[in-house]
Image (cartoon, rainbow, N blue to C red; front, side, top):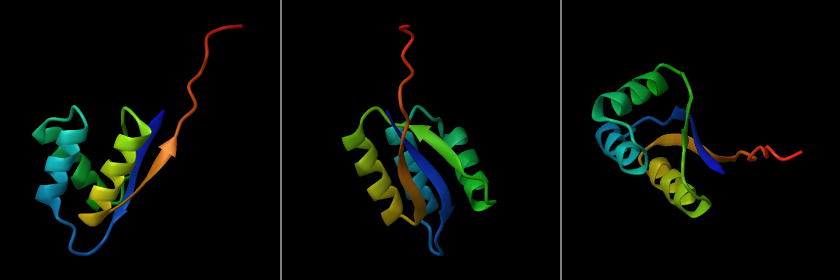
Length: 82
């Protein structure tokens, strides 16, 4: 199960476009996406769940083009069977 980890930003980051991208790939509202980006600018990383690896790769590539420093993190699913 992939996650997108946002850990920093580059000079010239396109915040409005990145906000729109966050809302497209997640269930964040405008206000929530803005808060995530405000936190990122303040040096606080955040992680978003993405439904599959192909979508995560596209999301991270587009966010990187907009000035975000981000990467895919694969999280192993925990099985409840004995």
